[in-house]
Length: 390
Image (cartoon, rainbow, N blue to C red):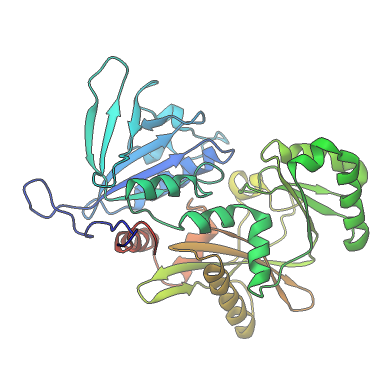
């Protein structure tokens, strides 16, 4: 007997037996420090989904974890006057909650408020999870959807978890022969039990590879919680800043070279790589941090000014990284092109930003895939897949 729970047909039927439009639940927000960027990303996706082809149900997850029914209002989901949006401002009520099915035989979503009869919102055929960071991009939501038997866009449980943890991501890359840069990991117990020993390991690491080093949360994205550390006196504050977002910290050596990104998208015949992009040095920022990405909109160069050989090489490495982690749907792979001419993979992002200024959609736009087509391809790829073992 197969342990796999198959998904329904890509063209579902209504209660009368007539074909109906697939219903897409766009889930966004979440409990991580990337809550606001998730809202911005979802707003862009909601604008792009073809309403003639799909029905859409926006579901926001508040910062404290409540699943809220939200307004379908992309115009309220953008960064305005340097102010970040939130699910709390979009929620239909302060107490109502949305509940996904726990029975794989049913895909009916229910909305309930205290003192009121629960209201059926209808079946959901596919979930488009626009969550970034822990409690959404890390395999937790994917596991819930697997249990519910609801197909979803993007990587599965394993790939999502590996793609969120910079340590294990690098370990997988190394095992598949992909080049990675030097790094050191400070686990929670290392810092809590013997901070002096953990500090000494980092200073020994820096003595070997040089200052500055970058201190990062191991399981976070959008360049949140990252500090460029120029010497030992800055180390403790940087570790504490990273631990504010994740108790596990990764320290990476500075790699001198150009920052190159490449998108991977799942087509019917397998994954393909986009034209690459380059992130040029940001004169107003010490490195490509959160504000440079989302507030001050540091521009990337698409396509990257690379030779044909360099372009082919980084595209090959991006697809290899996609396959190494068993990804599905999409990935943005980030590299350094060293002064020596070697590409080193820094990380992958299994749910890259989809904001209007995000590099992933820009790379595919330059590759001939428009933003609406990109969204449609991801939904269709999810509808073709089954949940369960695959």
